[in-house]
Image: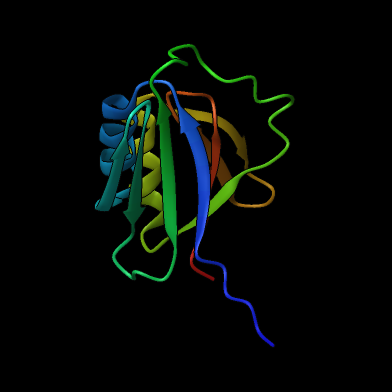
Length: 120
């Protein structure tokens, strides 16, 4: 028996703002959408298409989510780490840098941390 990771879910308070952020910051694009009474789920994919980020917007939950101590994250490998860092600096979304490890984190509109690492 084998298992393959297929998606990670983040609940978001403003779907359009989140879609714009993930498109601009990470190049993720919508691949499908499920709209039902009370909620919308949008699946985003990178250019490789191996993994999806599921954004869930609950109509009756417009406030930001309590993310605890943010001790979790989703990681992205950047093919051009320096260009990615420059772009994220310009966007103002870098929330933590670890120069010793050669990585940094960006924060989405709801406070989720996303790790950016160079391709090694």
